[in-house]
Length: 171
Image (cartoon, rainbow, N blue to C red):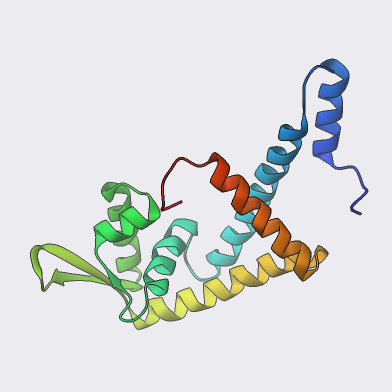
């Protein structure tokens, strides 16, 4: 579709404009497209990650460990906080990833009650391949924009997120 083309969101906002000309539908146009783009790319990313035996939730755990830097180790609490999950939700993901041999849990040498979660060599390989595959899909999706447009879009979305998010430095 060209930039001047009409998409499904234009059709929806046009219908609202006909039925309720008193409504300002620009917010609907913006967030409708963000929502549709998020769903579309989320589904594509899920398929890309399936090739590596993981889903989005497992990807998030592995990616959080990977981007923490060597030795790719965090506590379950640090993981849960970073990912905005409950510790119970984190435990299920960790169990699955540990069974798959992608991470291991060990006692924290500095806290008798704590655990440390570490990527295995296999986990490191899987996450490096999965993140590459995901970025390739995202790059492909941005092919319709030049570098300056993509950077402008990223900046505008950053501003929108900042203006709508709760005051939370983790978001």
